[in-house]
Image (cartoon, rainbow, N blue to C red; front, side, top):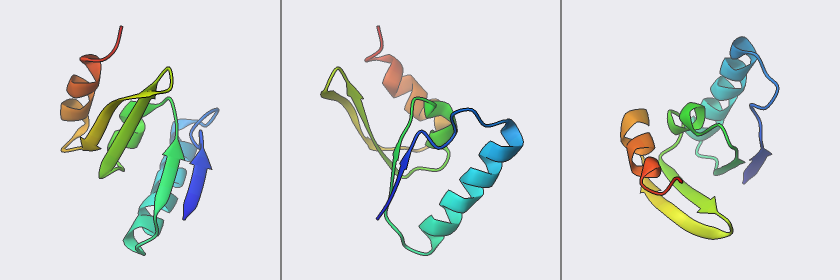
Length: 79
């Protein structure tokens, strides 16, 4: 199990892609990765399952077909 807390915060685009590549490599090796982030659009392209919490409650949980699909579902819960 690998746990990342806000791995993209404060990074430029090149550095974000390096971190994303690391996460992809870990995923290909069959490692379980848990990421906590507020940068959902970047992470959605790396994930096969997501759980979104809002004020301590789950508002979305499921698989992600693509970034547009995910963000469309999430907007249903955003205020």
